[in-house]
Length: 111
Image 1 (tube, rainbow, N blue to C red):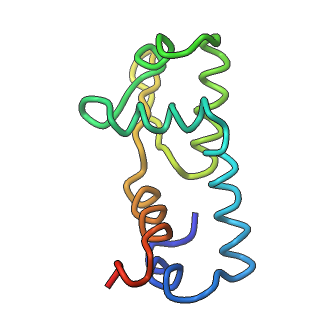
Image 2: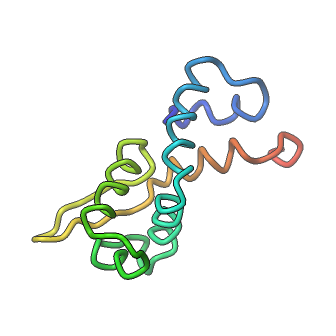
C-alpha cells in the first residue's frame, strides 16, 4: 500500500509508476471473487474482525484455501492478523480502506 500521507495526490493528479505498481498489487488481490468476499465479510463482521472459523461456512472451498486467500489479502496490506490460541483473527486495515476510498472518490467530491 502507498503511505497514508499520499492519499490526496491520488485523486488530484495521475498516479506515478511506483503508486501504480503498489495499487495494482492491491487490486489484483481484490480481483478474485473469493478474496473480495472475504474482505467484505471481515469488514462487516461484528467487532470488525473474524477468524477462519467464522468465514469458512460462506464458501464451498476448504479451510486451507480460505487461509491462502487470507494470506494474499494480508500480503497486499489489506488485512491484519492476530493469533489467539489455535485461531487467527483477521481485521481490515483502516488505512487500506481509507486509501481505497480516497482513490475511488472523484476529485470534485473529495473537496
